[in-house]
Amino acid sequence: MDRSIQETLWRQFGASIDMLENAIKLCPPEFWDTEKYFWYNAYHGLFWLDYYLTLQPDTFAPPSPYTLSEFDASGKMPDRAYTKEELLAYLGHCREKCRDLILGMTDEIARSRWVNAHKDYSVLEILLYNMRHVQHHAAQLNLLLRQEIDDAPKWVSVTKRVLE
Image 1 (cartoon, one colour):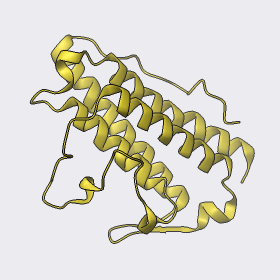
Image 2 (cartoon, rainbow, N blue to C red; image 1 turned 90 degrees about the vertical axis):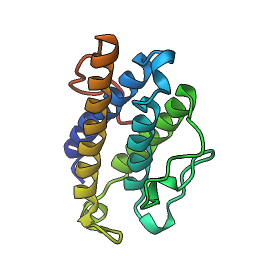
Image 3 (cartoon, one colour; image 1 turned 90 degrees about the horizontal axis):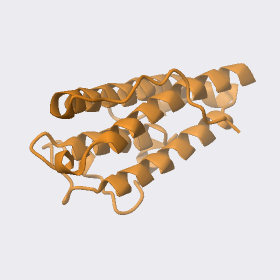
Image 4 (cartoon, rainbow, N blue to C red; image 1 turned 60 degrees about the vertical axis):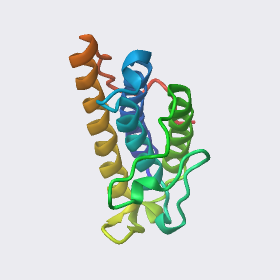
């Protein structure tokens, strides 16, 4: 794959991940685990970020201590609220997984299919879908922060992290 396309994908996808990270970091402890479920909204975004970065989705298993509860059709929540530190560590795991996928992306991988019971996309399209999903949840968290603490992180135009 053309290097400039890889870099562009990473600069924008990385910026979405940075925005999610900034929202998580800004959340004060007293708002983390309330009826607004800030922690859960952050976790949901991270779980699906990780899942959609898995080229063979039927092999997906999140790292410990996370479970497959997000796949429960009844809406089952995780057994406990995850801490900010746990979710920031999960975000770091996902960021590296995303970076590694984009760095290793070939035209053949980009055109290959990402298929589960509900989606049949090219790997390139699932990356774009995933980036939109991350940005959606970053925006939700920013709205919650604005409503609760009258503050929210600034927009991130591009990630400052280099691809290599």
